[in-house]
Image 1 (tube, rainbow, N blue to C red):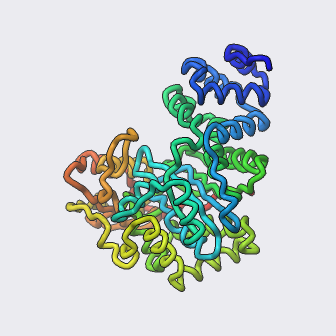
Image 2: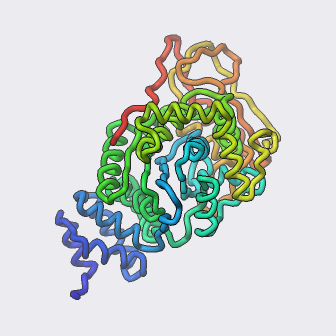
Image 3: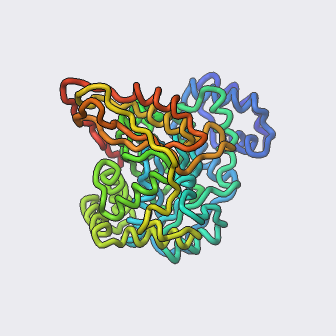
Length: 437
């Protein structure tokens, strides 16, 4: 076999040529084995960013990255296996709600998650705020729990799509993070390596999202669904709003508490609505529900009966956590200090700059900038009002939950400009912008 040299691949893509499967596999192999230098990898990433990739190239890159390390074989778990992925937002606690709810309907949900960089911790950090909760499961433990309980949420193994870890680190420092073929291959390679049959994608759009306009978000969603379906799995996507926090609680233990409140039927609103819609698509795509509407009805019944909350408690216990948190959220970590941000005037809330709210939560200690940073599970922000609601001067717009290491002054400065008031009532932003099948 003729050796494929990095400079040949670089030259071809630099001038807009379409790379073949062998060339893409050679690139990914070089990334994984370390035979391509960082400057060569970075040069190809920039060429891809400038010249783009065809569907054939993007699919080949996705599959090569998925096969760059271990892949999970879930065939010995009976039934259809499903997963959900979000492109990330603020107050985005949907996984903790829809995973146990869909499992209560008979779906097998084998969810591999990560730790968050930025606003708050990721799903794993949120779960770890539950006393005793273990998210570092071996593959065999993970599969046993999914078989027995119906669902589990665990961290990715070190060898799952290892090429993506190298590429993402270089994308971060070469300003190629938002390059669509690279975003698509990064997300989908991990999902394909995780072995699920059905994947529903939640693509955020707005001021707190990676893709800040509906047009960019739709293009990303369409590309991911198209490439995902070409891989032989079933993908669909929802484009959901992030022009204000999805939930009212932003933080790690705070978001667990809100998820429990939704599962217990105590809380309604956008977080519940998006969770039910995503879950309904999972049930429909897996063949458990005949339609999205029927799937949503099934999920609502599991909330009303308490089966969804019971399934969450069962999953927590199976992963070593204290299931009593589902009945008593006072067992979750609590911040020692609370500070209200009062409204400066009477008026309607016309806008909430979601990224500022998220960055304020990070200043309080809820998020991290580097993977080695520690998060404080107790701190965060609780929103008191949403866009379109009326407030009087002095009423609390939101409440900070602060700890001993929290930068309360910095957080208040950010939050003070995050919420805008108007004399005229503003309509709340549309919650679900589009569905991509």
